[in-house]
Amino acid sequence: MPSFSQQLLKWFDDYGRHDLPWQQDITPYRVWVSEIMLQQTQVKTVIPYYQRFMQRFSSLEDLAQASQDEVLSYWSGLGYYARGRNLHKAAQIIQQDFDGVFPNRFEDIVALPGIGRSTAGAILAIAHKQRYPILDGNVKRVLSRYLAVEGWPGDKKIENALWREAEALTPMRRFDDYTQAIMDLGATLCTRSRPACNRCPLAQACQALSQDRVSDFPFSKPKKDKPVRQASLLMLLNKKCQVWLEQRPSQGIWGGLWSLPQFTCAEALEEELKASMQTGVGWQQSLVKWESFRHTFSHYHLEIEPVKVAQVQEAPAEWQGQWHNLTQADNLGLPAPVRRLLGQLEKEYVKNGEMLKNG
Image (cartoon, rainbow, N blue to C red):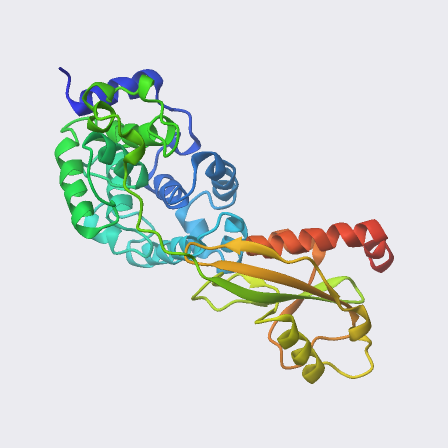
């Protein structure tokens, strides 16, 4: 019977995807960018972001020389923004410490910001053709089912056992194709829900399938109820239809992105405005509360209450931020909920003809 890797490679040759953007003109830089974008994000979501990103930052030098603001503007909407910040930071390190040449030693790659063992292994295997195992989410799922691994793969003991299996199963040849093949299998056939076991090249020896327990694997993380937090976002607009945005600190949620001023609740927002705004500007008459909506992070839900205040003369002098034209917001790195709100504002103002009147 053919080995695990032989069956997988035969399937990849015949049915695997070979036309993904990062599979063309393979370089360490292109593979690296794709691997970072694909962390916790599906291929179909990544493709347009990757293409747009590579058009602007076609080389590592381009990325290193760009500002963080610009890099994050091309990441906006992709989520997990620390990935974009780390990508930019790592490019600058490579430019400075490695003369702009992507390193080819595991120790050097894994030391870069945002790169773990699996990502480093994928870069070395695919771009440098060095034999290194990988264990991303897709691979964990494939191996957990194939071996019927009892336990959550995020548990350190289970993860270490999976790493040993990943190392043992990686072939001594064609490990660049094998790396792509096992990720592709997890993404296309051995999916989280409704896996296509009838088309899987590993079905005959898959222990989860033989036990009729495919849906049990991989084990889920022990559930904890996500807490719900509240936030009010202020959409402050001046008479030129510009919106006030503040840049978030580099660390934490939405780090480095431009966002609307955030408050714990609408009452706190109004108190701040009362204390900070000049009297007589009439902002209280223009205050409108929009319908709340929920945005979910990995560890909690954020219940967002948008509050619009229009036709102000100036923002409070002590606030740190800038006025931005609504029509130019797409050029900024924005959190998804903020981009959504600014899009709604733009539609509202265009509908009312305000932008035309104010230029």
